[in-house]
Image 1 (cartoon, rainbow, N blue to C red):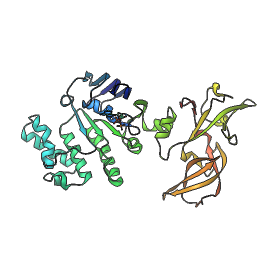
Image 2 (image 1 turned 30 degrees about the vertical axis):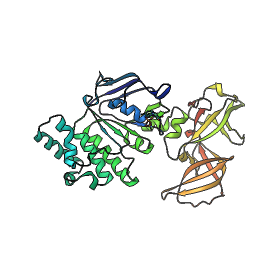
Image 3 (image 1 turned 90 degrees about the vertical axis):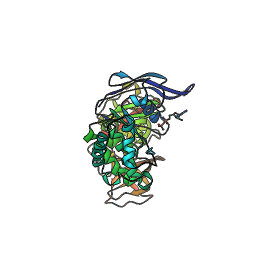
Image 4 (image 1 turned 180 degrees about the horizontal axis):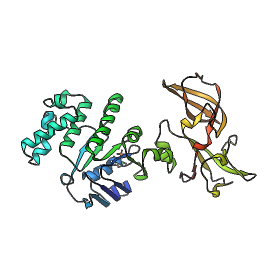
Length: 367
Ligand code: ADP
């Protein structure tokens, strides 16, 4: 297996149209790294440059310390699994899996051994004589993964492999891919726009936005310590709530006050320090709080807010309650044992130990 280094990589498709803007990533041997971000942020382009399917405008790409910018895709030691499976429709599963090895002139007996071994791992044994047209989406994707595995690549590249599957199957395949990573001890770079897939699969996640790398970190660090509002809002579902406001100082105490001026939180009860430059500055800050950190029972450092319920989404084990606080809609995650009604007034608590603060102009995290 292998380490992949993406160094100052830029991709300009048309002059001035930068699809990938100076991205730096070091993917360690046996690591599972997910590239995630909204549609058009440059995930696929980055992956395709690693695969050699797209030229690199500037920067360097290394696989196992060897610069591969100008190495042909077939000589990079990578195998790619696509969203649309890209299987040969006229070939059986066995022939699809054998094809790449045949071209490489691997002896027949060895090909056979590898296919049988891989088919066992992926539970494809009963399908080896079938053609892709007679299989379900999930089965086809397993064949596409099998075809990648038999080639024993240094690096696996996955481009939205589960996007064409229904929600239940996607969940099952997610678990299978995670197991496969443990079993193969493979280096994997995996592209998805789905943050749940990213959180559950990645050892580390690279969050991309408009061609730029926003943060490269473990799932929990992205969740608990996002570097900016983009990452804070992208990771987590429902997303983090944001309340615009400013910091005021009264009697040597610092408070967050929202724009409407009727919500006031004592910042001395938070767990972090905030640079003093924001004190009494109308250059505002934005407070971030996750839906599960707005609660119905009072946490130790909770501060109460009276809200009016807008809508309720019952999810069985919990309910997502949307409410208005000064004309702004926020969402909290409450236990499902109580029943609430739209328009109902409710007392909720915001856990001051769990709030984050951002600079409203730069959107960077400041506390
Ligand atoms: P993602 O995978 O995150 O959805 P892409 O990497 O496919 O994003 O695209 C990044 C940007 O590059 C988008 O603005 C897209 O329109 C542009 N782009 C992608 N492929 C091409 C291409 N072949 N020619 C010109 N522009 C492209």
